[in-house]
Structures are given as structure tokens and as C-alpha cells.
Image 1 (spheres, helix red, strand yellow):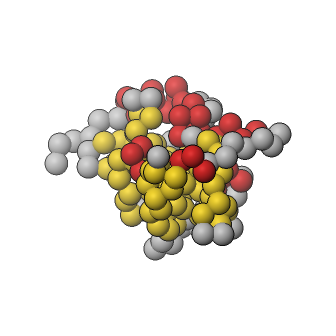
Image 2 (image 1 turned 30 degrees about the vertical axis):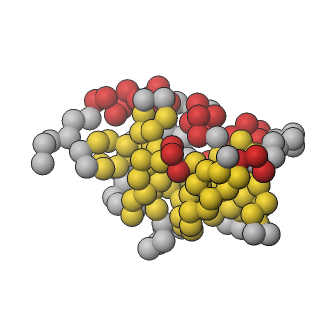
Length: 156
């Protein structure tokens, strides 16, 4: 079966997210900081009246700081009844990938649980992200939910 994936890069590594799990891709907007949250949660943003937590993908995946520029994007995804914005350095392209070619990752690394597997596409290795595992692994998720619940956005 073939599925479309949004491909983004973090450093020299390529990652893919199933396009069916993506709500939208947005240009970076102003981020509001929240107290006492992990470094990989940049804060929150207002997207069309909804308060959305922002996850810094380089910080979460490689403990590196993101360099925000005109290519930086928010990939909005809805997981476990909470919308997240995964901030990525660049959303490169959309690829149609045969899901039968995705191979499981068998390395002894903590980040392996965050991946569904890897696929070789056009001579490039693409790691496919398991969004459910990614966001369920986020520490202080309940704190983020409670902080968002306290915020009201005036009707525009």
C-alpha cells in the first residue's frame, strides 16, 4: 500500500510523517513561553483561535537548538485529543512511499520507540516518525494540557 508522507529534515537526517495524521503546515508565528516545561516544548501558539503547544523537533530528537528562519514550519497534528505543532527546520516535500518497504529499526536507542521504521527512497534514508509514541513519550504532558485549559482566547 502506498501512503503520502511529509518529509522534513533535522540537520542531515530526514524524517517522514504520514500526511493523513497532519492537520496543516503553518509558517512560524510568535511563540508564548510557559513556565516549568521541558526544553523541547517551546511554548504555545494561537492557530485560528486554538491554543497549540509547540514541540521543538531538533531539541526533542537530537538535543539541538532549532535555528528559526523563513523555512521553519509548524507541522500541526492531532494526537490523543490534543493538537501539537511540531516545529521543523524545513518541510521539504511530500513523497508517496510504499509502506511495505518501511523496515523496523532494531537499534538499542531510546529514540527507536519514536520511529515506525526507516525506508530507502531515492538513495536517501528516511526515518518514519510514530506520532503516537512521540507525543506519549513527552514528559509533563498533563502540565501542558492543564496550562492550555487555563487559557482563553477571545473570539475574533
